[in-house]
Structures are given as C-alpha cells and as structure tokens.
Image: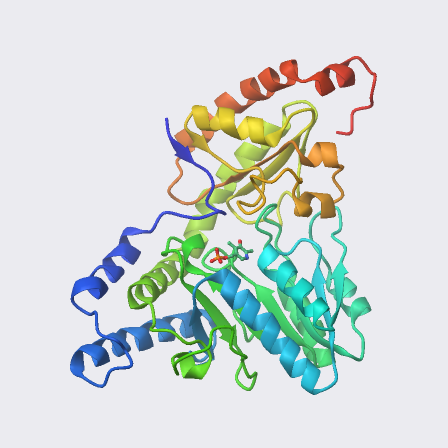
Length: 395
Ligand SMILES: *Cc1c(COP(=O)(O)O)cnc(C)c1O
C-alpha cells in the first residue's frame, strides 16, 4: 500500500485546481500587462483570482499581492513592517522560537541590519499566549510575527487574542498562515491581522505561488525589483496558471473546511492514540489545539531518519520534521524549542494527513509503525542502555 502522509511538506494538486490551470497554458496565455485582448483575458483571470483570495480572507483585492510562495511572502511582510518601523524610529521585532525558517532567517538578516529581535519561548503545549506577546512589547516594537499554526507540531496559536493585543498597542501584526490557510477559518478583520502569508501548495494548489495580504495603508517594500506588476511591489510577469490554480484550490479548500476537519480529526486522533500506546513515546504539542491532520510524536531510543527510510520501504511517506531540516543532522528547532532533549527530538515522526487519506491507510500505518520502532530499538545501543537502566528514560 502507498500512503502519502506528508501533506505539511506539500500536497497533490486537486482536480479543481488543475482544471483551472490548464486553459492558462495554451488558450489564455497572454501577458496581463498587454493592452490587447489576449492580454486582457489573462488580466481578467488575475483579477478574479485576487478577488477570490480577498473575499475568502476578509480583505480587499487591493490588499492581495501574489508572490513566488510562502517564503517570499514572509520575507516581504517582515521587511515591509521593519522598514515602516525604522521610519518611526522603532526597530524592535517580536516573534517566536518555532517559526518557519522563512521567518527566522529573515529576522537574522534584519538583526544584522540593526534591528532587535525577541523570540518568545514555546510553552510545553506548543501554544504561545497573548500574555507572552503583551509582556514582550516595548515602546520601540514595530512588528509582532506569530505563525497561525506550526508546520511541525501543528499547534494552533491564539491569533485573535494576539491580534487584539497588537492592535491595542498600535503594533503591526503579521502571521505566517501557510499551514493554516485552507485548513482553518481565517478572517483578517475579526482577527486584527495586518499582514498574512500563505502558500498554494499546502492546500492542493500548485507550487511556486504565494499570497501576501497587507492591510490598506501598509506600504510594501520590494523583494524583487523590475516592472510595475502587483502595483509595483512585486516585479515579474504574473504566473497566471499558478495563480488561477491557487485561487481555485483556495476556494475549494475554504468551501470544504469544516467537512475536511470533521473527516480528519478522528483519523488524526486514532493515529495519536495508536502511536502513543507504543511504550516510551510522547506526543508533541497539544492533543486538540492542533491542525486537523497533524500528528507528531517522539519515540525514545531511535533515529527519526532510520524510521523514515523503513517506512518508505513500506510505502509510507512521512517526515521527521520540516522538509527543510530533514537531511541535516541537527534535530528540529521546533522540538528543541518545545523543550525536548536532543536525543528525544532525534526520534521524531510527523504524519500530516489530508482529505485524500483513507481510514484503511491509517490502519496500515498503525499496523506497520510499532514493528519498525521495535526493530530499530533492538538494534540501538542507546536503547540497550536505557533498558538495562544504565541511563534514565527521558520519556
Ligand atoms: C511551507 C511553509 C513555508 C514556505 O512556503 P513555500 O511556498 O514553500 O515557500 C513557510 N511557512 C510555513 C509555516 C510553511 O509550512
């Protein structure tokens, strides 16, 4: 059986999204900046896609900028808020320890450029609080950036509460909503969100398309310079097929949000129950305040990478953390931020489901994982020492 359980890394393009893209390759292939009819037909599609994102997020089409993905949207959001802050003499930014590297590495670059960054600690349940944000605010704070839902452990952050704290303090609030968009309800007005990033390939749209929502009045700085596309804030001929696919996927995901969550949560909970029944296994992140399809556990005494390879041999595609950190020897910065010791963080497994997964696939995963974990533990010298009491169990 082949099971794809790595939907937090990327998803399959849906039939609906593909159908929206196909005409844009050979029929509606004009450049939307061209004045002729073929160009204008493409411009119409672009406008319709912008309208879809605005409507579904609760904003205005003029507040939507298309980018090359979530990473670019994150870069542009932070750099724009930072530039605005500097103009007012405010150069302090608050974010969290467990953001995606698109945020953390942009913040490192801003630190080198003279900004001060406070990264909030991650509580044991993987949910930062509005109190933490409030306590970290300073008179020179220009931006708070807290992700909507974490990409590794799936925990959902109290976005409306954090939004309110920021709004009351007059500080811009950005959220990396790449894991949440199309999976959780989002309303930029009700949640007091000023800037928001999302990425199409995390909700069955194509790769290479992102959206930056920026509230009216927040000037964006360019990350890409060139032509006057996207009101001059993001140069380059628009990726019309990608953008149309992204809009169709977003519309579909938002229309089916509750249905998908109701389908996925019991599957997720069954996986969590089955996996945590394996001795010396711990769930990472709050059991309920998490994305409907996210499961993340640590097995003591094994290496996540070995587990992934053996699972792949059984046809199961999973992850040990974010796709970006896999392949490096460092354990996940998210699990370390959560307080897991290095040796425990190394034994992590993330299974991220989508509505295409079936109950039979969940049963198959649960039938295969315990045997593989036992096999790896039997071969592990560390496990041997743990079992003989030469070192204490950490889980
Ligand atoms: C995937 C992801 C990104 C990056 O999005 P890309 O479109 O792949 O650049 C950023 N933030 C989070 C939380 C993600 O999960």
